[in-house]
Every structure is written in C-alpha cells, then in structure tokens.
Length: 75
Image (cartoon, helix red, strand yellow):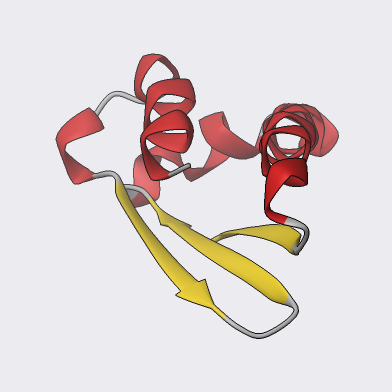
C-alpha cells in the first residue's frame, strides 16, 4: 500500500525524493501518514481538496482486502 501511495503522489510534486509514507497498524484500522515538502502540500491537496479526496478513494478501495478501515493522513 505504501508503494501505491508513493506511485500516486510522485508525479504531483516537485520534490519526490522527500515523500515519506509511514504506516501505523491498529486493531481495527490501518493509518498511513503522508509527508511531503511544504511547497508541495497544496499540490497534493488540490483545489477544495479534490485531489486529496481522489487519492483517499483509491487507497480506501485498495484497502478493502484487509478487512480493516484504511485512513490516509496528509501531514
């Protein structure tokens, strides 16, 4: 799942080498924390959060196999 998130984010940002995805596994959910360069945060979130919402939709759909809720936090 980390590689999926990284693959989606890399073309959107100017500093792909600074993308950090961490995973926190809890009993009922998996939380992914995405960190990018401060200049790239707006590009990842998008206008009115549209890009972030689209990214979350893809990640949630891919996480359906785990039988746990999947969350993506953009830091």
